[in-house]
Length: 608
Ligand code: AGP
Image (tube, rainbow, N blue to C red):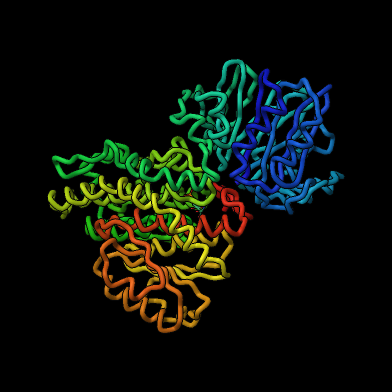
């Protein structure tokens, strides 16, 4: 959720901290703040609202300070008000803390501090950390932080300043990501590599349980349990251009239009056309491991969960593997049995989603081998799994996930072919699937060229308060994804349903005011979906159908049809989701919504 950006070096401090925060704003944006040391005292600037409000205040401030911390907030404890914005100061004004995560025992700690006479200024959990560090501070910030952390239960990513040690930042990580940017004569501590890449591509990923002391030309990593660590410096694989809008009005639109390229990136170098097979080196599977797989369990959240549902059909149909898909948060509430031969798969664009990470760690405690389908290289889920498939989709900045979904489905197609070829999928069938997959980017481009048609449809149909999305088989998860896109960026209530299931209740909602988007491309269930459309129309529902080019029957049954190129039903979700992404986008823009930073949302949900 929130974003942390700390800097030590000779650049203009406030301007540098603000530039870092702006690259983190998509992670949370209800309030923000900056802290630095000037004249032996801590200075704090904090404002409610977006970074622009903080920038207005900072513009009138001059400082020669060379170290500072900053934070953009997604409220967990305490309303989005200035008093709850970070950094939080200790009772003596000597310690400033910015924090991502949740301190689960903060009430108990707060009561203890209040009994000791400490007055609190906020309703946040974070404030207790500042007071506790100050209580432990005897001139060495690192030692004070190390003495405090064992008192904290829950998750934290911390960046901390002390008034008496002006050119030092101490960081600590447990369950919420922190990355060190190692520059020339400057250091950065951030919750996200997107804020580091404009300064340097050299990064060090912190592990859970580690602290770091940062000076402008030196960093020292230490684990609370294992002592100092000489960490290897990694090089980021993307550049600033990939986190700019490049002329698009919103990151979301840019990322929708990147999908021809990002789907190709997801399969590039992984298809063996002559053998009718795939190469997925990142799985770290031995042939024996792979052949021993008897079932799959997939956990994820949100859009990634929708991709997981497509993966269920793919793995069952191509590899004959029984598959269980669960919301990650529900998985940890169950006592799911993981026998030998279970492929445990976590799907996550950010690789930092707390619910998914928690499910992954639960599986690992049960001894399961775990794998990830992740976009962000070096993210926690990527580093805590035994292997996996990177999406190579580049940074996804828009809060509403788009290119990640199509790349996740592409990766799942490759995975299903991989296991299929070990079990029952003939090479000829695999070759046919993979050949069709390599045609998808061009077909995506053909859809994107007709974006204006979708903009017009959105204006005609998606201006009300509700919408229903229907689909069957491979297209059922697509219906769910279309509904999620619409509700999370336009705030129109939308539900996705299996097309047949609509008869068992939701049909009561159908009237002339209910737009019904039906994903009705050719496949085994087409005839039944056509019947479902007619059931909707018989009740005056207004139907937008997503259909296969050349379909002669659908137009007579629908109010509007958007045609997509023909592909195999198992690949259709990659194409069919794109018109739904654009319908949601244009509906949200028409309603004046903040498409890239929708209210109440954040890009990576790093709290459970
Ligand atoms: C999707 O548009 C949402 N932003 C959200 O549901 C997201 O998919 C979910 O939080 C999972 O995120 P992850 O893929 O980074 O784990």
